[in-house]
Amino acid sequence: MTVTFPLTEKRDAEALLQHLTLHKLTYPGNCVVSLKAHVAQVSSSHTTALGTARTAW
Image (cartoon, rainbow, N blue to C red; front, side):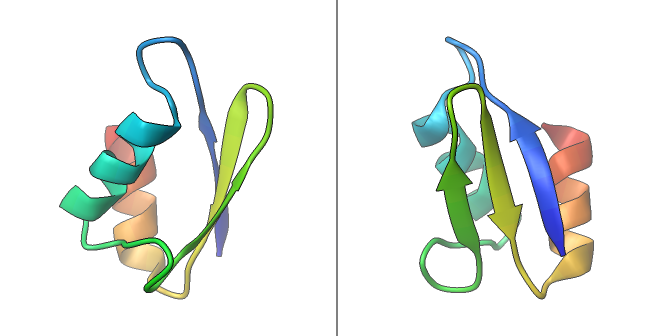
């Protein structure tokens, strides 16, 4: 499953990685993170954790 996370000045890539860790998703452990200009695409086979992380973001 791949989910897009919007990035802002306050919610940057570092904040996203910390947020994913709270939901038991670690890079490069069990998810893949691709950074673009204003979004990050996160892929993981842990769909429930990824969906919850996206909802909470």
